[in-house]
Amino acid sequence: MNFEELNLNRQLLNAIEEAGYTEPTEIQWKAIPQILAGHDIIGVAQTGTGKTAAYALPILMKIKYAQGQNPRAVIFGPTRELVMQIETAMKQFAKYTDLRIVALYGGIGTKVQKEQLEKGVDIIVATPGRFLDLYLDEVFVLKEVKTLILDEADKMMDMGFMPQLRKLLEVIPRKRQNLLFSATMSERVERLTEEFLEYPMKIEVTPQATPATLISQKLFKVPNFKTKIHLLEYLIRKDESVTRAIIFVRTKKSADDIYKFINRKTTNTCRIIHANKDQNSRINAMDDFKDGSIKILVATDVASRGIDVREVSHVINFDVPIIYDDYIHRIGRTGRANHTGVAITFATEAEMYHIEKIEKIIRMQIPEEEIPSEVELTETPFEESQEYARELDFYKKKEDPTYKGAFHEKKRDIKPDQKTSSYKPNKDAKTKAFKDKMNPKKSKPTKPKPPKKPKL
Image 1 (spheres, helix red, strand yellow):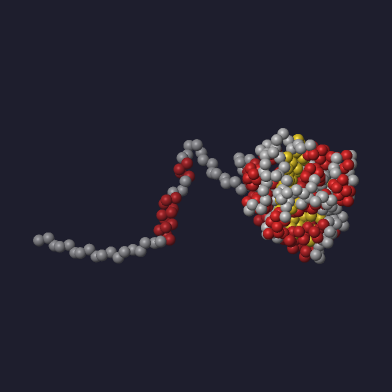
Image 2 (cartoon, one colour; image 1 turned 120 degrees about the vertical axis):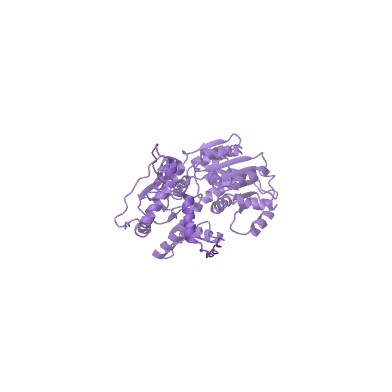
């Protein structure tokens, strides 16, 4: 099938051809006709399979031309980076139309965004928080909205956007078309979609949480943090196949530390993205990575969804994600647009607990590799090993409240014929003795007794 068979207009077909797309992907040729027919859709497909175009093209086809002042379609995404990427794709496809597309996201002031909206808008792409702020400021009205799209719907629900979305759903016209797209769609999310989807058609190109077949996965079991650092240094300095890599970590502090480490070892080849970085810094880091100015991007899971950078050779999970669906989205940053890619994961003993859960979700075992002999294996400090044991206990107890781990409190065995009270210390007596010791009472001088009067 080609794009002309999808009944798209000539303006869109010209833009598609200019963008270099020749054939629709499976999710595109299955979803586009159903969206054009007006169905509510739940679309599930692997990352890098063209989900954005699957909903963007039919929406642009239905809206056709600029009209009025207020939006007729609203697209929500969970992160600023994803919203900006959707905006870029929409404008690329709408190149030969007069449609007005505006992106709304936090991290920058609202002045410019308000000015854009006041000029008139047909399609809004937004994060829920900034969209709600501007709606409450009465910058636009929603009475003309005919289509609502949630991109990475599961992540928005996991990130706590549901209260904001529910508020917005109360003011968006009920008679509308709803579209949800993601690489993963849990049962919990499907139950939540029942609130605002009417008889949805589910289009599942691949089973949920299936990694792309062009991605080669590897697992390195490492004893401690220092060994992780040594292995990372080996990969980025000695492995010539690592031409462009994204390193994912769990926390902002880890991202900062690894970014500094890489820049000490190499010369200006690394940038960093996490939630504490201002918008300009994040945009510049992504632009430098896309155009090849830098080789390595260090990021938290803020960059795990929807970031479309072609020819990423490697994704390195320095830390194993504890939200297991994020593993699919992380490794999906490589192996995009029919390119091959490698996803490498470092896992300590405590993190192997999460690896087992991830393997159940993706329905395969991640192949384990031997750590290269050139990598220094360091001994795990006692404090670090204790921290791993506590972390493992925490997750196992969370899963099974009856679980007793390495750090559970041991109770003394009491024989049936003995009273419990005999094993309890007399706390009152001990407390009194302690207070007496700390605050000794000053002895009062005793008055001499008067002599007894002699009897007459």
